[in-house]
Image (cartoon, rainbow, N blue to C red):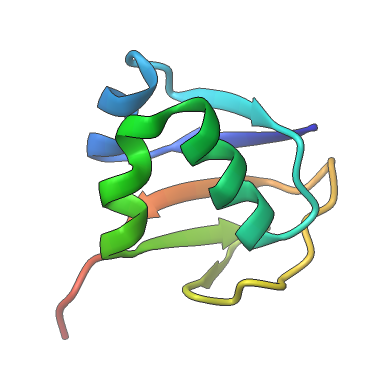
Length: 81
């Protein structure tokens, strides 16, 4: 199980929880499991989310491996310069 910290509006879709546990070994699995458990996250995932994995930010790195002891933060994708 991976502990996932949720940022911003994503918390609203998990009944206000700031951290959830997910059984996943990759970024794609993590997103799939989150949407299965919290269907309200589906529109956010479809628009795009970013994942901070041990301090490195990933977006669309579907096969990026995640270990159970990794620090994982999921956040809405932000545009800007």
